[in-house]
Image (cartoon, rainbow, N blue to C red):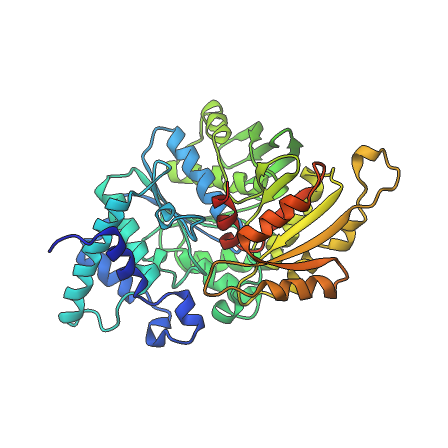
Length: 459
């Protein structure tokens, strides 16, 4: 059978159930949590996911950063690394990478052509009753591609939750949980405990479980559950690994990290935000567990110096300072606010370009930003003369079927007492902010990776 063209391959993929369809109520039985379909696909392909060790990462926030830092470290050690992440910022190919290079259009089309033939066979043979979902197909494509190109290791980011996420069809040697907070409660459960139990579901018999949650009660619950599920070992943040120095440095952070193998001091990390120091500690400790040994400090520093983190407090331009951050829930926005305060203390006016997806409350998102405190910040270069920073909320509509209209963001900003407008789509919102901002101002684009990705395309 002839391989599909790139366009036809993407059309085939998009014909399957995805999160948008689930939220429209059109998913039917395919929305039920199960790993049966992805297992059937992989079993028929002789388990490509068994051909390399897997480092799997879940968590409410930070899992993308931990995945990318882990990838850079493994690559600097001379290993070929497959990385599977979601969502993508600009193009679908970004989700499947080998050695930090996205899968080509031709290879992606070939993978989806194979899966189309496989799906047709399994449905006709009765081995599949319901077609696989969009995400299951992409996950299977990643596992197959990593096997085809013979990677030495794979870093796999969970899409949502953990226990029933398609990525959990693979047995991770190292299972990482960054943190637990309220997100996707309509799917994962109404409390942090419910969500924690879903996320710890990535732990398989024999896995080493890296537990990054700080809450003592949740941490104890997660450790007990992981051991009950057969974890060979559980490493807990603050007890077994930690970032004990985490300071602002020019262009990033200066961190010191302790792990079961050794202490790494004075590492420069070219990422902004206190949380990125903590994410780096998790990544370093996780890679050590995958290797079974310590990392040469010089190799580690070289790896960290190369890290690029698109869409995570990314500086896109200066004068005015344009920052992009994919914080998409209240917990992420709260961390973003702290990072802004610590890493970028000097600004005159702040323009917040905010776009949200359904399931988010723009009022709560803006409240998590603590705009009143930001508005009371003094412009540092005035020498404390009392100049007050102004905050303007610029609403926009993300390029997604799940988008909330920018008018709701405008209403939220006005409700909280700040000058607000609905600028339309993301490019229009960023362009408006750039035209309104002065050289000493900050433009912060946030609320969704869809918003960040659309903004990056402008530059």
